[in-house]
Length: 149
Image 1 (spheres, one colour):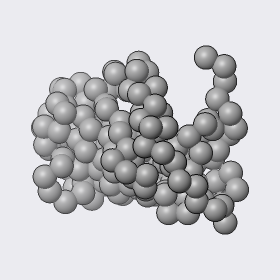
Image 2 (cartoon, one colour):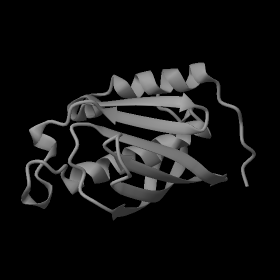
Image 3 (spheres, helix red, strand yellow):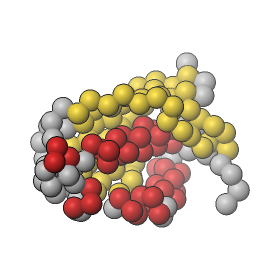
C-alpha cells in the first residue's frame, strides 16, 4: 500500500485553480476545491435547465450529468495522493438513490486507499441540504507527470 503523503493546501489550491480554469468545468458551472487534505469538493451553485430533464422531469438533474460529476470527483481524488500526476478514472460504479431536485449540486469524495498507481475512492452527490442522492465508488489510475503546458 502506498504511504500517505501530506499534500500542502497551497499545492491543492493550485490544482483546483487549474481545473476551475478549464472549459469543461466552466461548461458545467462546476467549482472544484479541497476543504482539507483528505477531501475533494465540487459545487454547482445554480443548476441550469440544460443539466435537468432526468426522469422526464425538468426539476430533476439528468443522470448523465451526475455520472460525469462522479467521474470528475473520483478522478480528482488522485490529487490527494499525487497532485503532479495526470490521472484517469478506469472504473466507476454509481448508485442513483433518489432524484436530485435542488437548485444546487454539492459533491464530496475521498481516497479509500491507494496502492501503486491505483487510487480507490468513493463519493456522494446531493443538493447540499439533504441526504445524498448519488453514491459512487471508483478506481483512478495515476498516469505520471503532466504534459508540458
